[in-house]
Amino acid sequence: MNQLNSETLACRREWKSKPLAEWFTLTAGASLALTGMAKVWSSLGNSKFLAVVDPIVGVGFGRLMLTIGMAEIVIALVCFSSKRQTLAVGLVAWLSTNFVVYRLGLWWIGWKKPCNCLGNLTDALHISPELADNIMKLVLAYLLIGSYALLFWKWQQARSTRLDVEGDNPVSPV
Image 1 (cartoon, one colour):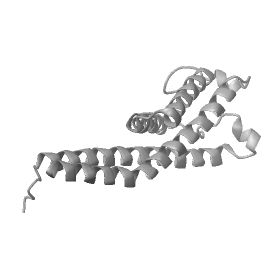
Image 2: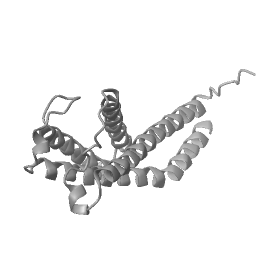
Image 3: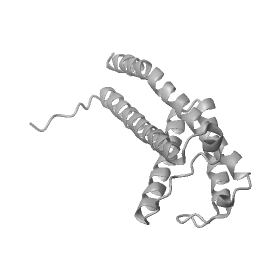
């Protein structure tokens, strides 16, 4: 009977969180698909900026944007199509962590130029590179905080379910 109750409890927890997790996965996938396509499109252009060597990775911005854009598109496809939501959210967390580390590296070396995350799309949308950089910082914060919050929540949910099933409710150290 105890196992039946804990399974019911686990199903209720999963049901309540599913819309939020699905929403995040779809919006993260849409964000990554958009920025990925913008990077790929920009990397195929003929701007002199594409030949400049990235100060962190050490390859031309064109090659870097193409590679990162393709990775974003692949992760977006996983977000849209995978039944394994934890995989999709984990990939978003991994990629957004890499973006934060990259941006911290740029800050560390004193790079003052705005991130060219959207490539030539800023020109097409008639927005300044500074505005685009600020928007991308917000998107990055959303992806980073959202993915880690969902992963933590799923970990807590699995831990709680396991404790309910095992009957090992922890005793508070009061």
